[in-house]
Image: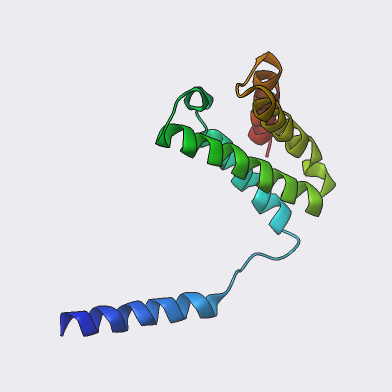
Length: 118
């Protein structure tokens, strides 16, 4: 009986969520993507990119996510291009030398500064 109640309740919640849809308009989507990129950067601990295992994986995915989301924001609205470029510089530098060097740290600081203004 409990299982049936859980399934019925879950189905109702799922149906309500599915019918509600995405309330974002295409005009607000770039701003939302930029804010989401900034949230990923806020949670990024770049020191963890020098570790192994799950801490590295989480940090790498956050950096990659911030890169993708900021690029999406810039594609939708050119005002987010500086954010996308700064995050891309961090990403490219890391891919090149597997570390965030002085230039990468400056780019990360620039991206976080842009985020502070959003």
